[in-house]
Structures are given as structure tokens and as C-alpha cells.
Length: 468
Image (tube, rainbow, N blue to C red; front, side, top):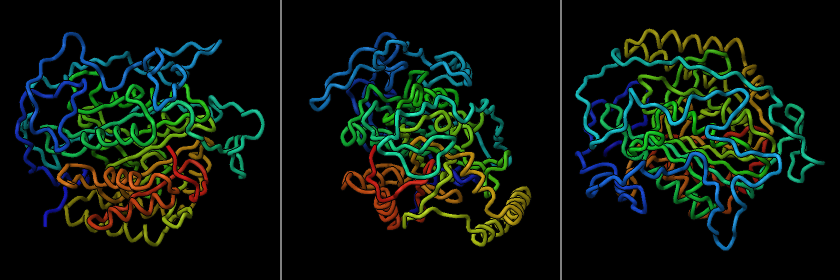
């Protein structure tokens, strides 16, 4: 029995993986051409069109009115307002000052030839991780919030968060999506199904939830347009684009398929002592993106009534967006299990000892000490500091301490969790959050040990209908 590759587990056990055979000229034209679902094995001759190639998503979104969809003509985007001037890209924000756009690609030019195997040898001691990052200044807790006129009909009858009642989104407003898939071509960390995941999720959103391709930004490492390469700069820029000018009942969708990891927690908001991360294409040079940064960009600024649905098909992704309410398959909020987590810390320390990783032993024991002294205080603190009145829902590929499989289903390379989510909702989109979580887990349990987690920015009723 063959085992699926893992989407990164700090030890990079797949260093011996052989890259796919070099295809013909690469990538295929963007246009109406859709690459074969089985991967990147047979592209035809590609003659680049004059001028910059069309991008999957546009910066900024097109100003003209979109074509009618299913008999319904949505309002022009952005909708005209008497006092509103559409922001240039990237949107101007009081607290974020992104670098000029498009980014310069001096040290990371897009490939002009088919990806090839990099003739280098990596070992666990040779790979250096740049875990440094610049966390932007946090906006005040009431940043951009506006009290709705009167009690909204879909508000929760629970304690306010920062003076605002958590408000569900009807998902009837504008729809935007940011889809990221990284195969890491020609590196020891190469994956096979992440770009396919993006293509499958894109079609899934268009066919089932009335998203438009024009309202999507797609970052994959098979593109030639520099602004569509999933390096760290482009990913952070696109995250800001996704949630800019958020308004009640908007529906934003984020999907990431690629490597995930963990980095030492520097601000004491993690029960296990580690921040969860995602790994851009240039993570070895420019560092990983940690959960605190993603929360600050995509969750903190959102006002009540805005939906953000986030999907992380990556390793160690259980709390990748730092949402404080994690729900069980029984629809109840999970509380820290100190006995179980303490056992995991001791086991991790033992595994580090067997590998000769004495730094890992120290980190695991420090984590255990934090749990013993803090009890449930970190979880309680996060419910105060990381809650949001916006309607933010996240589904992870696995728990924080697990890996997510990069596998093959029905002859197609794919991420196991992305496959399970699409299969569940194509079979029945009219299900509750609890039913959706249980169904995704059931699909995966037949072949995989990973357990997806559902988390939210506020307390929620898991019996409500799952919508996007």
C-alpha cells in the first residue's frame, strides 16, 4: 500500500521525491484553455500573447458592469456611492502600508522554461528558516465598525464583542475569492495536487455559489505574470485586497493549498507554544506567514455582518487563522484538554530525543510548562482578544499537530481535505455546519488520519445552514 505524501511536517521527509517529467513549453495559455485535470504532463506549444498575459484575477477588479449571471445582473462593482472613491490597488488603509504594486521580482523571476529539478542537496541542518516577520500595527478594536441601524434581524442574542453584537452575513452582497495553490516545482518540497485544488475550488464556487471568475484572484506557481506568483509579498497584498471596503452581507472566500508549518509563539497566544504558518513559494528567503499576521489582515478589520470563509488545506492548520471558538463534531465548543495536550507534549519531546533534536525537546517541555501554569487562561484570553463581530468561519485540513495529505483521488492529484469538502457539498449543499464538518471527516476517515477542524470568530449555532 502506498502512502500519500504529506504537505510538510517540519522534517521534509519527501526530500527524495523525483519531480514530474519536464513538460513542453510551460504554462499553458490562460484564456479559455483549461489544463487537463490529471496534472501538468502534456501541454501544447504555447506562444505568449503580446503584452502582459491575462491574470486570473484583476487588480483592481473591473470597473464596468459584470455580465448577467443566471438572469440576475449584480450591481456594478464597486457600487456607485455619492461620497465613495474606489480605492486604487492595493487599497489605502490607515494601518497597512503595502509596498508598490506590482512587486519587483529581482530575486524571484517567474520561470520562462518548464520547471526543473534544482541540483542542490538539502538536509535538516542546512535548511534555514527565516521566521522573522513584520507584524503591522494593530488597528483599534472598533476600527471601521459602524453600528447597524437598529437591531439587525440575524444578530446573536449574546454578549456584544467590543460593543457590537456578532452579526451573521446573508451572503447576498458582493462576492470575492482569493485562491492560492503552490506545488513548489523543482524543489525538495514539491507537491502535486495544490494547483489542481485551486482549479477545482474555482469551478466549485462558480457552479454552486454564484461567484464570478472576474471577482477572483488566483495565485499559483505555474503562471508567468509576476503579480500572480504566490510569493510572500503577493500573498499578503492579495489578502488585503480580499477584505478591503468590507460591507455587511458581503461574502469573501479564502482557500490555501500548500505547505504549512509551525513557528515558536512570540506573544503567548498559543496553548501549545507554536504559531501556525503557511509557506509562500519564497519562504526560504523571505520567511513564513504566521497566523497572527493573517488574523490581523483578514479578520481584525472586518465589521459586523461580513462573511469570510477560509479553507486551509495544509499541515498544522487547525488554528491557522487564530479564531477562538473551535467546534466539535457534536456542535459544542472545544475546551483545552490539559491531560491530552500534556501527553502530546511528552510524546513530542520523546520523538525529538530520538531524532537528536535537543532544541525540539526544550520547546516541547516549555510548552508543557506553559500548559501546567496557565491552565485555560490562554483560551479565555483569546476569546476576548481574538473574537470578532464579523461572521468568520474557518475549516482546516487537520489539527495543529497533524499533517494534511497531498494525494490522488480518482486518478487526479489533489489535497485530501479539498477533495472531501467539494465531494460533500456537491452531494448536498443544503446542510448545516455540523453536518458539513461530520461529512468531511467521514470522507477522510476511510483513508486518512487527519481530522479537519471548524472554528469561528464568535459563538455560533452549528445547526444553522452552511452558506457561502
